[in-house]
Image 1 (cartoon, helix red, strand yellow):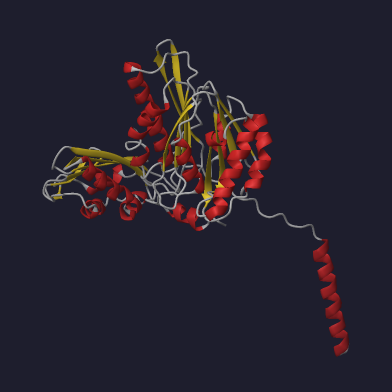
Image 2: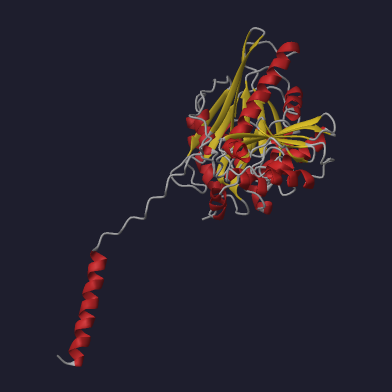
Length: 443
Protein backbone atom coordinates (compact mmCIF):
# COMPACT_ATOMS: atom_id res chain seq x y z
CA UNK A 1 0.00 0.00 0.00
CA UNK A 2 1.42 3.38 -0.93
CA UNK A 3 1.89 6.46 1.17
CA UNK A 4 -1.12 8.13 -0.38
CA UNK A 5 -3.31 5.13 0.47
CA UNK A 6 -2.34 5.32 4.16
CA UNK A 7 -3.39 8.97 4.27
CA UNK A 8 -6.66 8.22 2.58
CA UNK A 9 -7.43 5.38 4.97
CA UNK A 10 -6.60 7.49 8.03
CA UNK A 11 -8.83 10.26 6.74
CA UNK A 12 -11.68 7.79 6.19
CA UNK A 13 -11.28 6.35 9.70
CA UNK A 14 -11.38 9.80 11.24
CA UNK A 15 -14.54 10.59 9.32
CA UNK A 16 -16.14 7.31 10.46
CA UNK A 17 -15.20 7.95 14.09
CA UNK A 18 -16.66 11.43 13.92
CA UNK A 19 -19.92 10.03 12.56
CA UNK A 20 -20.09 7.41 15.30
CA UNK A 21 -19.60 10.03 18.00
CA UNK A 22 -22.31 12.20 16.49
CA UNK A 23 -24.69 9.25 16.54
CA UNK A 24 -24.10 8.55 20.24
CA UNK A 25 -26.85 9.81 22.59
CA UNK A 26 -25.82 12.90 24.50
CA UNK A 27 -24.53 12.07 27.95
CA UNK A 28 -26.61 13.74 30.62
CA UNK A 29 -24.77 16.13 32.90
CA UNK A 30 -24.06 14.57 36.25
CA UNK A 31 -26.79 15.30 38.75
CA UNK A 32 -25.91 17.97 41.27
CA UNK A 33 -25.35 16.48 44.68
CA UNK A 34 -28.08 17.14 47.19
CA UNK A 35 -27.07 19.72 49.75
CA UNK A 36 -26.15 17.94 52.98
CA UNK A 37 -28.35 18.92 55.91
CA UNK A 38 -26.55 20.25 58.97
CA UNK A 39 -25.96 17.53 61.58
CA UNK A 40 -27.22 20.04 64.14
CA UNK A 41 -30.58 20.50 62.39
CA UNK A 42 -33.85 19.75 64.21
CA UNK A 43 -35.61 16.55 63.15
CA UNK A 44 -38.33 18.43 61.27
CA UNK A 45 -39.88 21.82 60.69
CA UNK A 46 -42.09 22.57 63.70
CA UNK A 47 -45.85 22.71 63.57
CA UNK A 48 -46.60 26.41 63.85
CA UNK A 49 -49.96 27.82 64.97
CA UNK A 50 -52.11 29.63 62.45
CA UNK A 51 -52.02 33.38 63.01
CA UNK A 52 -55.32 35.05 62.25
CA UNK A 53 -54.92 37.80 59.68
CA UNK A 54 -51.77 36.36 58.06
CA UNK A 55 -51.58 34.51 54.73
CA UNK A 56 -48.53 33.10 52.94
CA UNK A 57 -47.56 32.04 49.43
CA UNK A 58 -44.40 30.92 47.66
CA UNK A 59 -43.65 30.33 43.97
CA UNK A 60 -40.83 29.67 41.51
CA UNK A 61 -39.86 32.96 39.83
CA UNK A 62 -36.39 32.00 38.57
CA UNK A 63 -34.65 34.99 40.16
CA UNK A 64 -31.44 32.93 40.29
CA UNK A 65 -32.41 29.36 41.14
CA UNK A 66 -34.25 26.93 38.90
CA UNK A 67 -36.89 24.37 39.91
CA UNK A 68 -37.32 25.68 43.44
CA UNK A 69 -39.50 28.26 45.16
CA UNK A 70 -37.56 31.51 45.48
CA UNK A 71 -40.15 34.23 46.15
CA UNK A 72 -42.58 34.38 49.05
CA UNK A 73 -45.41 36.77 49.84
CA UNK A 74 -47.16 37.52 53.12
CA UNK A 75 -50.48 39.38 53.26
CA UNK A 76 -51.37 41.00 56.61
CA UNK A 77 -54.90 42.02 57.52
CA UNK A 78 -56.04 45.63 57.97
CA UNK A 79 -55.13 46.95 61.40
CA UNK A 80 -51.77 45.14 61.54
CA UNK A 81 -49.04 46.87 63.58
CA UNK A 82 -45.48 46.61 62.25
CA UNK A 83 -42.08 46.83 63.94
CA UNK A 84 -38.59 46.23 62.60
CA UNK A 85 -34.88 46.05 63.34
CA UNK A 86 -32.22 46.14 60.65
CA UNK A 87 -28.54 45.75 59.87
CA UNK A 88 -26.21 48.59 60.84
CA UNK A 89 -24.10 47.98 57.74
CA UNK A 90 -23.19 51.21 55.97
CA UNK A 91 -23.53 49.34 52.66
CA UNK A 92 -27.01 48.05 53.44
CA UNK A 93 -29.29 47.10 50.59
CA UNK A 94 -31.99 49.11 48.88
CA UNK A 95 -34.63 46.88 50.49
CA UNK A 96 -33.33 47.60 53.99
CA UNK A 97 -33.30 51.36 53.46
CA UNK A 98 -36.83 51.22 52.09
CA UNK A 99 -38.09 49.13 55.03
CA UNK A 100 -36.44 51.44 57.55
CA UNK A 101 -38.18 54.45 56.04
CA UNK A 102 -41.56 52.70 56.01
CA UNK A 103 -41.32 51.43 59.61
CA UNK A 104 -40.74 55.02 60.71
CA UNK A 105 -43.90 56.27 58.97
CA UNK A 106 -47.15 56.97 60.79
CA UNK A 107 -49.96 55.13 59.04
CA UNK A 108 -53.72 54.81 59.54
CA UNK A 109 -54.53 52.00 61.97
CA UNK A 110 -56.94 50.32 59.54
CA UNK A 111 -54.45 49.67 56.73
CA UNK A 112 -53.16 46.23 55.83
CA UNK A 113 -49.57 45.35 55.01
CA UNK A 114 -47.51 42.89 52.97
CA UNK A 115 -44.03 41.40 52.93
CA UNK A 116 -42.36 40.09 49.77
CA UNK A 117 -39.01 38.28 49.88
CA UNK A 118 -36.79 36.82 47.18
CA UNK A 119 -33.73 34.61 47.46
CA UNK A 120 -30.78 34.35 45.08
CA UNK A 121 -30.06 38.07 44.70
CA UNK A 122 -29.61 40.55 47.56
CA UNK A 123 -30.15 43.73 45.49
CA UNK A 124 -27.31 45.26 47.52
CA UNK A 125 -24.72 47.67 46.13
CA UNK A 126 -26.74 48.07 42.96
CA UNK A 127 -27.06 51.87 43.03
CA UNK A 128 -30.14 53.63 41.68
CA UNK A 129 -31.07 50.48 39.76
CA UNK A 130 -31.62 48.75 43.09
CA UNK A 131 -33.93 51.51 44.28
CA UNK A 132 -35.90 51.21 41.05
CA UNK A 133 -36.32 47.48 41.62
CA UNK A 134 -37.62 47.97 45.15
CA UNK A 135 -40.11 50.60 43.99
CA UNK A 136 -41.33 48.42 41.11
CA UNK A 137 -41.83 45.35 43.33
CA UNK A 138 -43.52 47.11 46.23
CA UNK A 139 -45.79 49.09 43.91
CA UNK A 140 -46.66 45.91 42.02
CA UNK A 141 -47.64 44.11 45.22
CA UNK A 142 -49.55 47.15 46.47
CA UNK A 143 -51.59 47.35 43.28
CA UNK A 144 -52.39 43.64 43.35
CA UNK A 145 -53.42 43.58 47.03
CA UNK A 146 -55.13 46.97 47.16
CA UNK A 147 -52.95 48.73 49.72
CA UNK A 148 -50.52 51.65 49.75
CA UNK A 149 -46.96 50.90 48.60
CA UNK A 150 -45.81 52.43 51.89
CA UNK A 151 -47.16 49.31 53.60
CA UNK A 152 -45.34 46.80 51.41
CA UNK A 153 -42.02 45.67 52.86
CA UNK A 154 -39.50 43.89 50.66
CA UNK A 155 -36.38 41.86 51.39
CA UNK A 156 -33.80 40.27 49.13
CA UNK A 157 -31.05 37.79 50.00
CA UNK A 158 -28.29 36.29 47.92
CA UNK A 159 -25.44 37.53 45.75
CA UNK A 160 -24.30 41.15 46.23
CA UNK A 161 -23.66 43.59 43.39
CA UNK A 162 -25.87 42.12 40.67
CA UNK A 163 -29.01 43.91 39.43
CA UNK A 164 -32.19 42.24 40.65
CA UNK A 165 -34.27 40.89 37.74
CA UNK A 166 -37.41 42.35 39.27
CA UNK A 167 -39.51 41.70 36.17
CA UNK A 168 -39.45 38.01 37.09
CA UNK A 169 -40.87 38.85 40.50
CA UNK A 170 -43.53 41.13 39.04
CA UNK A 171 -44.57 38.35 36.66
CA UNK A 172 -44.97 36.01 39.66
CA UNK A 173 -47.24 38.34 41.67
CA UNK A 174 -50.57 37.03 40.26
CA UNK A 175 -49.55 33.44 41.09
CA UNK A 176 -48.47 34.52 44.57
CA UNK A 177 -51.76 36.31 45.16
CA UNK A 178 -53.76 33.30 44.00
CA UNK A 179 -51.80 30.94 46.26
CA UNK A 180 -52.18 32.92 49.52
CA UNK A 181 -53.40 30.85 52.45
CA UNK A 182 -53.04 30.73 56.24
CA UNK A 183 -51.24 27.38 56.44
CA UNK A 184 -48.33 27.96 54.03
CA UNK A 185 -45.76 29.42 56.41
CA UNK A 186 -43.47 26.41 55.89
CA UNK A 187 -43.28 27.10 52.14
CA UNK A 188 -42.48 30.76 52.86
CA UNK A 189 -39.59 29.63 55.07
CA UNK A 190 -38.23 27.39 52.30
CA UNK A 191 -38.43 30.10 49.64
CA UNK A 192 -36.06 32.35 51.64
CA UNK A 193 -33.23 29.81 51.82
CA UNK A 194 -29.87 30.38 50.12
CA UNK A 195 -26.99 28.37 51.64
CA UNK A 196 -29.34 27.24 54.42
CA UNK A 197 -29.71 23.48 54.71
CA UNK A 198 -33.07 23.54 56.49
CA UNK A 199 -36.00 25.96 56.93
CA UNK A 200 -36.29 27.53 60.37
CA UNK A 201 -39.44 28.07 62.41
CA UNK A 202 -40.44 28.63 66.04
CA UNK A 203 -43.65 29.38 67.93
CA UNK A 204 -45.17 30.15 71.32
CA UNK A 205 -48.67 30.42 72.75
CA UNK A 206 -49.79 32.23 75.90
CA UNK A 207 -53.13 32.63 77.62
CA UNK A 208 -54.44 36.17 77.35
CA UNK A 209 -57.46 37.77 78.96
CA UNK A 210 -60.29 36.22 76.97
CA UNK A 211 -58.35 33.95 74.64
CA UNK A 212 -55.08 32.56 73.40
CA UNK A 213 -52.34 34.69 71.87
CA UNK A 214 -50.13 33.00 69.28
CA UNK A 215 -46.66 33.83 67.99
CA UNK A 216 -45.03 32.17 64.96
CA UNK A 217 -41.73 33.06 63.31
CA UNK A 218 -39.53 31.97 60.42
CA UNK A 219 -35.91 32.79 59.63
CA UNK A 220 -33.17 32.25 57.10
CA UNK A 221 -29.48 32.47 57.83
CA UNK A 222 -26.40 30.30 57.56
CA UNK A 223 -23.38 32.39 56.61
CA UNK A 224 -22.46 36.08 56.82
CA UNK A 225 -23.77 36.00 60.37
CA UNK A 226 -22.40 38.46 62.92
CA UNK A 227 -23.98 40.33 65.82
CA UNK A 228 -24.94 43.70 64.39
CA UNK A 229 -28.69 43.17 63.95
CA UNK A 230 -30.33 41.30 62.58
CA UNK A 231 -27.81 38.82 61.20
CA UNK A 232 -30.39 37.25 58.89
CA UNK A 233 -33.91 37.55 57.52
CA UNK A 234 -36.54 36.97 60.20
CA UNK A 235 -40.33 37.41 60.10
CA UNK A 236 -42.40 36.98 63.25
CA UNK A 237 -46.19 37.13 63.38
CA UNK A 238 -48.64 37.37 66.25
CA UNK A 239 -52.39 37.88 66.62
CA UNK A 240 -51.90 39.98 69.77
CA UNK A 241 -53.59 43.35 70.17
CA UNK A 242 -50.68 45.73 70.70
CA UNK A 243 -49.84 49.20 69.33
CA UNK A 244 -46.90 49.62 66.96
CA UNK A 245 -44.89 51.75 69.41
CA UNK A 246 -45.07 49.09 72.14
CA UNK A 247 -44.34 46.34 69.62
CA UNK A 248 -41.22 48.19 68.49
CA UNK A 249 -40.05 48.66 72.07
CA UNK A 250 -40.39 44.94 72.84
CA UNK A 251 -38.59 43.95 69.66
CA UNK A 252 -35.69 46.34 70.12
CA UNK A 253 -34.95 45.48 73.72
CA UNK A 254 -34.99 41.71 73.10
CA UNK A 255 -32.66 41.85 70.11
CA UNK A 256 -29.36 42.15 71.99
CA UNK A 257 -29.72 38.89 73.91
CA UNK A 258 -30.94 36.96 70.86
CA UNK A 259 -29.98 37.91 67.31
CA UNK A 260 -27.15 40.20 68.43
CA UNK A 261 -25.62 37.38 70.44
CA UNK A 262 -24.87 34.94 67.63
CA UNK A 263 -21.99 34.74 65.19
CA UNK A 264 -20.98 32.24 62.52
CA UNK A 265 -18.16 34.07 60.78
CA UNK A 266 -18.07 37.68 62.12
CA UNK A 267 -19.34 39.09 58.80
CA UNK A 268 -22.36 41.37 58.99
CA UNK A 269 -24.75 41.14 56.04
CA UNK A 270 -25.93 44.04 53.92
CA UNK A 271 -29.48 42.71 53.99
CA UNK A 272 -30.30 41.83 57.62
CA UNK A 273 -33.95 42.42 58.38
CA UNK A 274 -36.26 41.47 61.23
CA UNK A 275 -39.94 42.36 60.90
CA UNK A 276 -42.56 41.75 63.59
CA UNK A 277 -46.25 41.99 62.69
CA UNK A 278 -49.21 42.00 65.09
CA UNK A 279 -52.61 41.57 63.45
CA UNK A 280 -54.66 42.19 66.61
CA UNK A 281 -57.11 39.40 65.66
CA UNK A 282 -56.81 37.27 68.80
CA UNK A 283 -59.93 37.02 70.97
CA UNK A 284 -57.77 38.13 73.90
CA UNK A 285 -57.92 41.65 75.27
CA UNK A 286 -55.18 44.18 74.41
CA UNK A 287 -51.88 43.38 76.09
CA UNK A 288 -51.14 44.99 79.43
CA UNK A 289 -49.69 44.20 82.83
CA UNK A 290 -48.87 40.56 83.49
CA UNK A 291 -50.11 39.47 80.08
CA UNK A 292 -47.80 41.95 78.37
CA UNK A 293 -44.86 40.63 80.39
CA UNK A 294 -45.77 37.03 79.52
CA UNK A 295 -46.04 38.00 75.86
CA UNK A 296 -42.59 39.62 75.91
CA UNK A 297 -41.07 36.50 77.50
CA UNK A 298 -42.69 34.30 74.84
CA UNK A 299 -41.52 36.62 72.07
CA UNK A 300 -37.97 36.52 73.43
CA UNK A 301 -38.11 32.71 73.49
CA UNK A 302 -39.16 32.60 69.83
CA UNK A 303 -36.40 35.04 68.87
CA UNK A 304 -33.74 33.05 70.73
CA UNK A 305 -34.97 29.76 69.26
CA UNK A 306 -34.67 31.15 65.72
CA UNK A 307 -31.26 32.66 66.51
CA UNK A 308 -29.99 29.29 67.76
CA UNK A 309 -31.30 27.55 64.63
CA UNK A 310 -29.22 29.92 62.51
CA UNK A 311 -26.10 28.84 64.40
CA UNK A 312 -27.09 25.19 64.06
CA UNK A 313 -27.18 25.80 60.30
CA UNK A 314 -23.89 27.70 60.20
CA UNK A 315 -22.16 26.94 56.92
CA UNK A 316 -20.36 23.64 57.47
CA UNK A 317 -21.12 23.61 61.21
CA UNK A 318 -20.72 20.41 63.21
CA UNK A 319 -20.63 21.95 66.72
CA UNK A 320 -23.04 24.28 68.53
CA UNK A 321 -21.06 26.36 71.01
CA UNK A 322 -22.22 28.56 73.87
CA UNK A 323 -19.64 31.05 75.15
CA UNK A 324 -20.62 32.15 78.65
CA UNK A 325 -18.68 35.05 80.16
CA UNK A 326 -19.25 36.13 83.77
CA UNK A 327 -17.43 38.25 86.34
CA UNK A 328 -16.47 40.95 83.83
CA UNK A 329 -16.00 44.59 84.79
CA UNK A 330 -19.19 45.39 82.82
CA UNK A 331 -21.72 43.76 80.52
CA UNK A 332 -20.01 45.53 77.63
CA UNK A 333 -16.67 43.97 78.53
CA UNK A 334 -18.33 40.57 78.89
CA UNK A 335 -19.72 40.95 75.38
CA UNK A 336 -16.28 41.88 74.01
CA UNK A 337 -14.69 38.80 75.55
CA UNK A 338 -17.48 36.47 74.42
CA UNK A 339 -17.31 37.73 70.84
CA UNK A 340 -13.51 37.59 70.75
CA UNK A 341 -13.70 33.91 71.68
CA UNK A 342 -16.66 33.11 69.43
CA UNK A 343 -15.13 34.84 66.40
CA UNK A 344 -11.59 33.54 66.80
CA UNK A 345 -10.66 31.34 63.81
CA UNK A 346 -8.16 29.57 66.06
CA UNK A 347 -10.78 28.75 68.68
CA UNK A 348 -13.32 27.71 66.04
CA UNK A 349 -10.90 25.44 64.17
CA UNK A 350 -9.72 23.89 67.44
CA UNK A 351 -13.37 23.10 68.21
CA UNK A 352 -13.80 21.62 64.73
CA UNK A 353 -10.78 19.39 65.34
CA UNK A 354 -12.03 18.43 68.80
CA UNK A 355 -8.81 19.84 70.25
CA UNK A 356 -9.14 21.19 73.84
CA UNK A 357 -6.61 23.92 73.07
CA UNK A 358 -7.52 26.33 75.86
CA UNK A 359 -4.52 28.50 74.99
CA UNK A 360 -6.57 29.77 72.02
CA UNK A 361 -9.18 31.02 74.50
CA UNK A 362 -6.53 32.77 76.59
CA UNK A 363 -5.29 34.54 73.45
CA UNK A 364 -8.83 35.60 72.46
CA UNK A 365 -9.48 37.08 75.91
CA UNK A 366 -6.25 39.03 75.69
CA UNK A 367 -7.07 40.59 72.31
CA UNK A 368 -10.69 41.47 73.18
CA UNK A 369 -9.97 44.96 74.50
CA UNK A 370 -11.84 44.20 77.74
CA UNK A 371 -10.32 44.69 81.17
CA UNK A 372 -8.67 41.43 82.28
CA UNK A 373 -6.36 40.15 85.02
CA UNK A 374 -4.46 36.97 84.27
CA UNK A 375 -4.47 35.85 87.90
CA UNK A 376 -8.21 36.32 88.42
CA UNK A 377 -9.80 34.67 85.41
CA UNK A 378 -10.85 31.03 85.07
CA UNK A 379 -11.76 28.87 82.06
CA UNK A 380 -14.07 25.86 81.91
CA UNK A 381 -15.13 23.33 79.29
CA UNK A 382 -18.62 22.49 80.50
CA UNK A 383 -18.09 21.76 84.21
CA UNK A 384 -14.39 20.93 83.76
CA UNK A 385 -12.15 23.56 85.37
CA UNK A 386 -9.31 23.95 82.89
CA UNK A 387 -7.39 26.99 84.14
CA UNK A 388 -7.45 29.47 87.02
CA UNK A 389 -5.21 31.83 88.98
CA UNK A 390 -3.01 32.51 85.98
CA UNK A 391 -2.18 28.86 85.28
CA UNK A 392 -3.58 25.51 84.25
CA UNK A 393 -5.63 23.79 86.97
CA UNK A 394 -3.31 21.15 88.50
CA UNK A 395 -6.19 18.64 88.50
CA UNK A 396 -7.07 19.19 84.84
CA UNK A 397 -6.41 16.22 82.56
CA UNK A 398 -6.02 16.72 78.83
CA UNK A 399 -7.92 13.50 78.12
CA UNK A 400 -10.96 14.89 79.97
CA UNK A 401 -10.92 18.01 77.82
CA UNK A 402 -10.50 15.93 74.66
CA UNK A 403 -13.44 13.72 75.61
CA UNK A 404 -15.65 16.75 76.24
CA UNK A 405 -14.74 18.31 72.87
CA UNK A 406 -16.19 15.29 71.07
CA UNK A 407 -19.71 16.44 71.96
CA UNK A 408 -21.84 18.20 69.35
CA UNK A 409 -22.96 20.86 71.84
CA UNK A 410 -20.33 22.63 73.93
CA UNK A 411 -20.17 25.32 76.61
CA UNK A 412 -17.01 27.39 77.02
CA UNK A 413 -17.19 29.41 80.24
CA UNK A 414 -14.91 32.24 81.31
CA UNK A 415 -15.14 34.03 84.63
CA UNK A 416 -13.11 37.25 84.63
CA UNK A 417 -13.12 37.64 88.42
CA UNK A 418 -13.53 41.41 88.20
CA UNK A 419 -17.20 42.33 88.64
CA UNK A 420 -20.78 41.41 87.83
CA UNK A 421 -20.74 41.85 84.04
CA UNK A 422 -22.03 38.88 82.05
CA UNK A 423 -23.01 37.88 78.53
CA UNK A 424 -23.72 34.77 76.49
CA UNK A 425 -22.89 34.38 72.81
CA UNK A 426 -23.55 31.40 70.55
CA UNK A 427 -21.37 30.27 67.68
CA UNK A 428 -20.29 27.19 65.73
CA UNK A 429 -17.06 25.61 64.60
CA UNK A 430 -15.16 26.48 61.42
CA UNK A 431 -14.71 23.51 59.10
CA UNK A 432 -13.41 22.75 55.61
CA UNK A 433 -17.02 22.75 54.46
CA UNK A 434 -17.33 26.49 55.24
CA UNK A 435 -14.48 27.18 52.83
CA UNK A 436 -15.98 24.93 50.15
CA UNK A 437 -19.39 26.63 50.37
CA UNK A 438 -18.02 30.15 50.15
CA UNK A 439 -15.37 29.35 47.54
CA UNK A 440 -18.12 28.04 45.24
CA UNK A 441 -20.92 30.43 46.30
CA UNK A 442 -21.30 32.15 42.90
CA UNK A 443 -20.45 29.08 40.79
